[in-house]
Amino acid sequence: AAELTAAGFEPIVADPQDSAGIKFKDADLIGMPVRITIRPRSLDRGGFEGRNRRTGETEVVAPGDALALVRAILAP
Image: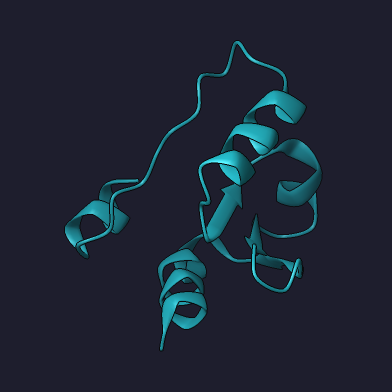
């Protein structure tokens, strides 16, 4: 979140007390164009899950590549 903020983005960090489904639904309702999810399953696969809301495509990216993913999705 700090790296995204430093790059000029406004990340929203979800409350860990809510279920994942509630957080995902909220992100879709407010129109978040990118969702980065950090969970054990994606960490086991090598990083974070990044989801492009426009295409619905999800991919696992290394933690150091999350900012590049956000920039790529939001590029005009």
